[in-house]
Image 1 (cartoon, one colour):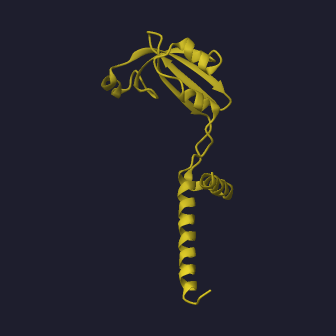
Image 2 (cartoon, one colour; image 1 turned 90 degrees about the vertical axis):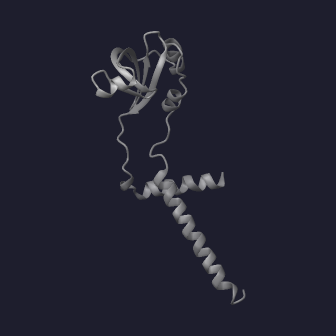
Image 3 (cartoon, rainbow, N blue to C red; image 1 turned 90 degrees about the horizontal axis):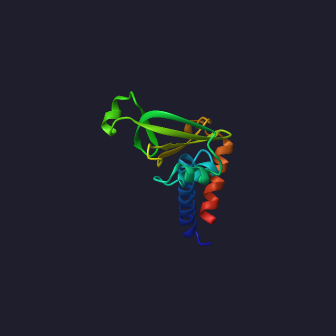
Length: 153
């Protein structure tokens, strides 16, 4: 190799290495902390406006618990309690039937209005979120492997 090419090659390789490390760091930092479960996927596919029976069919089983509550839906995934001061800004509290499914540490809640239509649905978990400041070697390795699979296809 020519003596003039070596410094350029070293600079290019060092730059590419830095870019790779930065990219892996960003990908690891913003990658999901847990894999998306089948229950989360099913929940996200429940269309608003279907009947409670149709929601039960999509979930595959009847709900584990059914209750009624007064509250205000801010959007399809956020319900305020009836005594929340923000409730009036979103139309005031209404009566909803709350249908809940429990699968291990995952739970699905579907809110059904008085006309029998699904107006809200959300997934929640008993697991505590992993703090981004507590990355360990295993998480970094998984992040690098995920990034590599993303690049390679």
